[in-house]
Length: 463
Image (cartoon, rainbow, N blue to C red; front, top):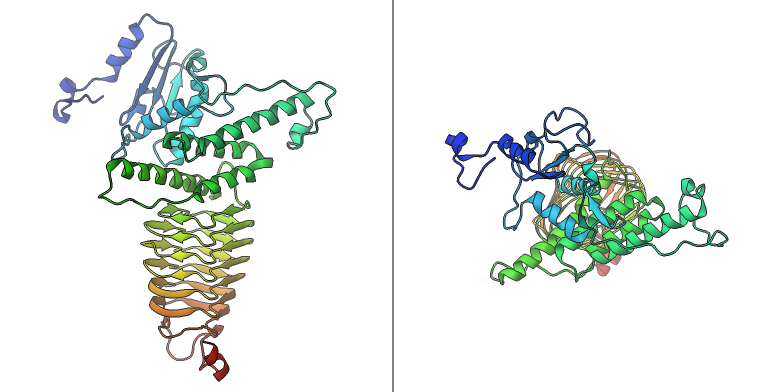
């Protein structure tokens, strides 16, 4: 292990071999021993990682001991620039400060590790490792800051009727009551942590607590997701700029991290193969200001997804390889002025996707190799007045894409090498064709593509 003055060229004299630390721990005259390592390749301290890494069995070389490492044996630990703590230590401290909603009064490693692992992996950080001997995972190391006691149960003759899913309905009434009370308590605690008056680390803990609750509470999963979306719809404070006081810049970065974490958590649950899928639920991003965010590979299938009046204001927002199938996705009135909004390789299959009255005024919006197959994609009254909007290599193979009353008055809109093999792509009723899109065909447009004609006198009067 590296020390402050470690020299890579003379490690044997300037670094500390882990077995020396292990020997000191083994010789300590205590019955319970805990080692937490936050350093690169720290997983190497755990012997034989080839087995079931998540099960706490076997020995770690020290009887009655527990070891928790920030990384696997082959990964480096990460320290985000400008942060006080490393990624692993920061997540662990946040968890201990905020607690685990619905957990026991005293936190043990058996409860801490799954939550810590979920937090780190959902942020795309190295997966922590653990190993323990005896019953040490039941050792309490801190009080649970989110702990709340349940109230009294109803009497056996109570007429309370609580519906919480088929399996729970078969349980005794008192068990069903307790389960509902636990979920309600967890919901109230997690929602309270998400308040704008709470410190960023508490709000982050609230995000993961609410997501975890949604995973386990199917009958109210939509409500939990609604709360997470509501976090994004809160009033947006723009970047104060490099000249602002450091405290203001740090506050902005912390708030942005909370918002981007919500997006990452939602996207993780919308990907194929998610442990618990949120596909088919409704997502309300109405009026949200996006200054970055990654929806890559999300599957918006069924349900209603609203980006109505959203503002893609800065940074890079990715919908790369996302799929919009069935249901309704609404970008009506959205403003695209960010550095880049990327729909590359996205699939629009069935259902309805609307960009009605959307404004493309700055930056770059790319639909490179996107596939429009069936359904309806609506660009009615959209305004293309600046920046670049590219449909390069996009495929239009069914359904209807309408640009009725759209305005092409500036910027660059291109359909280079786009393939039109079915359905209808209709520019015929465009309201402003003064700066038309660029196409790569010669002569007549492909079948199904309708271009504007000289407007009638009646229409010209209405333009």
